[in-house]
Amino acid sequence: MKINKNLFKALFYLTIVLNLVFVLQIFGSLTEKELSVFFNSDALYLPSIYKDIFIDNSGFAGWHLNAAPNFFPEWPLYFTVRYITGDFKIAGVVYSLIYVLAVNVLTVSVIKYVFKRIDYRHLILINIGFALFLHQYILMNVFYETAFLFFVGFHGGAYLMALLSLLLFLFYLRRGKVIHLVLLLIIVFLGVLSDRLLIMYYVVPSLLILFFIRNNEFRLRILFSSAASILAAFFGMILYNFIKNSEFIYIIGLGYKKFDLAKITPAFNNYLQTLTGMIEAGGVELIIVAVFIISIIAGTGLSLKAIFCSKAKIGNLFLEKVLLVFMTGYIVIVALTPVVHGTFLGQGHLRYNFSSFYIAMSFFFVILFLLERKKPKISAFVSILTLALVVAATFSAIRNEKNNDTIKGLISLSNYYPEEVKLIDEVAKEHDLQYGVGNYWYAKKTTMFSKEDVRIYTALEDLRAWLHVTNENWYFTNRKGKYGNPRFNFVLLNNLNPEGEFFDKLHEKSDTVQNGNIEILITPEFGYKNWKNLYLLNEEN
Image (cartoon, rainbow, N blue to C red; front, side, top):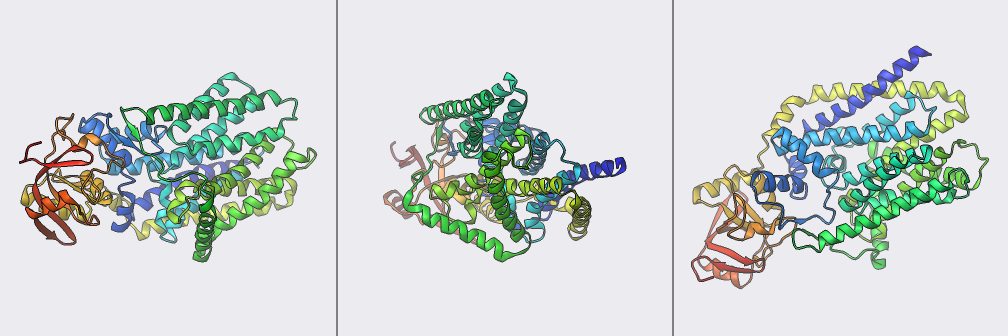
């Protein structure tokens, strides 16, 4: 028995290592197209902030941040990694490794803390379940959904904060120590300030504990923890709105109406179509959706028993019942959040609720543990299943390495130079260009990857500055930092279709240069008085 325990303990740590190996193998096998997705303008949000503040010395004032600014944990974690690695491309890989490890460890920690009798076999299965999401790419080349684990600032931080909040919540319920309540309050406060999705990721599911208010032993802890979560969220929102309304930095609006009733039905249909597409794709995607559905159905039944049937044999410990209800609530609430908001348009919007799949996968193996506890006869089956999946995961890692040279791929990633940026650099070098304006999806990528120090800032069709996730000071003269005095002399025409009075004035005195699929309009020098008023530098201001 001890040999078996030690064996499964070793395999548990092996599966954590394998998950990290899978992450490296994914990054080491990305194609040019997939690298373009991973380093798209949205994903360059934090890398560009770091560069602007710490390298270009432009300062923090004037920044227009995401609607979810991602202050915690992303900013301190990414900035530390970026400083140590010295390169934003490598930092993206290291950050992803740390994030995957943190999510994996926190998930296991929560479940192990509550289910004291759970053994390493079930924890191994949870790790293997997590590996399935990495195999969306490894086995099926579905990169975008896998990449939600890797993107910096795509609400992954809110999921991490939710897991940490849940662990502190459970600590407080079991031990009743004030320090855990205080830490919970701090984490929820920082989490909501950083990403309001934490309200749906943690605060709302945690309030389901109020169903257990009749429990005399835990009543005060239930009330205190619920009150702490609500107060922390409330003050987090107050500070969020204060920052948003300040004139030091800005937080962009959501751009849509929340709880838009007219859009709920279309959003729900879009969500169903996305799930249907995953089912039709088969393989890993089918397994993920099947587990998701099973977890909702089984979790609903277990939760109802936990709440209304005190004698139900689902685990006599109070924390077990609480976690069952929380996890079920999390899966449903988080899955439906962008649907109820009316904002779910397709696969790309899985960024808002992808974590419901992760919780469902872990919950599925918790259900298996509860089933084995009730029916010990299936213990041998669980052991065989665990060993088989560990062997399969190990062979997957070996096969991946045979098919792809991970080290070579990672070196290639560190030297990644987008083709469109290379073409822009060639024109810029030949015609002495540095500052220009262009489409959002070209602008930030060019600014971050250019080897000729080319700076392209986002503009609308009439060339007014579009201040979406940028520093407004980039556009104006006599500002701080290395690029504090821009003199614009070109317009990147790709995907911009410029028009308007000022553009017509520029166009009369401009030349168009084509390089591959890149089209650049070389113009007289111009500048910005403010975000909507432009002027030619050879004219009076």
